[in-house]
Image (tube, rainbow, N blue to C red; front, side, top):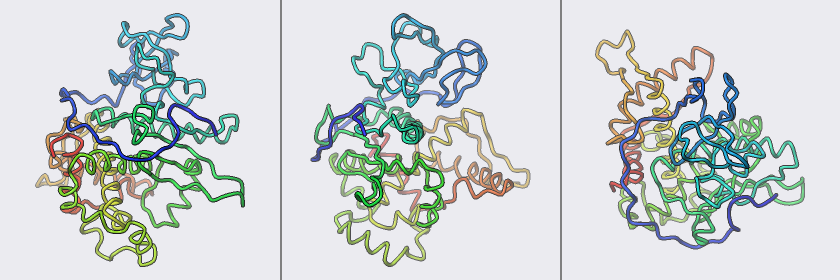
Length: 381
């Protein structure tokens, strides 16, 4: 293992700012276009397959840009020619395609500066798995930066800065396996989760309908923002009114969950079976699902998608996704678009013999919880 962009692990508390700057209304930017040839690009693309230009993501302008050499380590983005910059230090491992903000003295980009421990990159297997984790982590940071959520590194706040450790299991019989989890701003992700077969095995063993790297990142960072936006921001009572009393013993609740299983009627109030474990897990699961939904709707909006089933005479399953879900005014606007859209996606998946893309039910109490998350990220609670 080696150090990357962050500081060593410590623990305590961090008081989040009371408010955040207002954000201007913006258009969805999840689809990108090469400024040289007009080719449509993926968020993770490193090179334009049509014209060969090297590509990089500029987080401060939310643009994936074709580049031209600017001398030395600098590159000129064709999207904003007056902002030459250099690649994140992790680009040398093909683990990052982001540029460091212009004028910054950091070696790492806005996402990678939160790395603490990374795997041994001289091990090809570890390097390949770490790259997969970075793809997921950068999609997470796309969302966090869009909402301008508090993002302090461990160096900036040694007590509660956000830091990621990507850890491989020790050799057999030489120590316990790595557990994915969160502890006071420290997020540990087990490297084995990047193994598709092993992750699928764990998904089945734990009876989960959904288990992905991106899901892990979104869930664990939910715990971090519970600390910052709920506990440290004076919103405990408001949160407890929605998610329940978090002061109950967490370890006892976890043990009860694994010994007694999930309540039979859990779907009436929770977004997932694991959310029934404890209010902290309910919050983190709901936070993750809010990110799932908003990010997916943004992509649908970028494609100009609409749903209008021919058999739906009453229009109950119709939706036109022509708004930016990151700037949605209410959870009702998001859910009104999401439910018809995901019904269509699940139907398409079934025609391919696949399971539902989104195998979850959003009961009214769950929508209320999503509304609480919506208020938190928009600073309206």
